[in-house]
Image 1: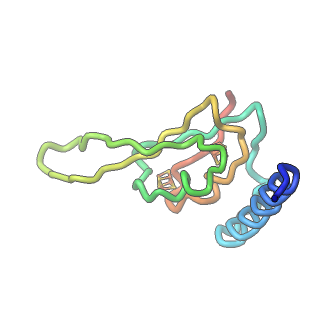
Image 2 (image 1 turned 90 degrees about the vertical axis):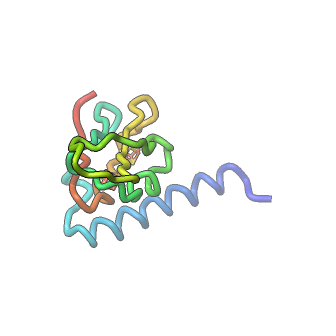
Length: 110
Ligand code: SF4
Ligand code: SF4
């Protein structure tokens, strides 16, 4: 049976792998984004296209998707999803910032 320690080690390695892949894809180093316990992710609703990337990479389950009403009454859109950060659960790891294709997420002070 896999031990808890082994699972934690795998999680750390997997997180490092994802960081490396996404940093490379974005041409941005994770180290250049301020993170940690004093920071929390923040989503700009206007820039979010509801692509589901950030909740996929967040292994702290700190992001949920919700339906947001369309601002214009002239357009009927059935799927207008946005990401929302659950501040209490966010550990400031910054993975979501790298995953976002529209740069809708930034890290802010808690
Ligand atoms: S910074 Fe990390 S923990 Fe916080 S929402 Fe983004 S991926 Fe999740
Ligand atoms: S990755 Fe960016 S665009 Fe996609 S759901 Fe998250 S905040 Fe929205």
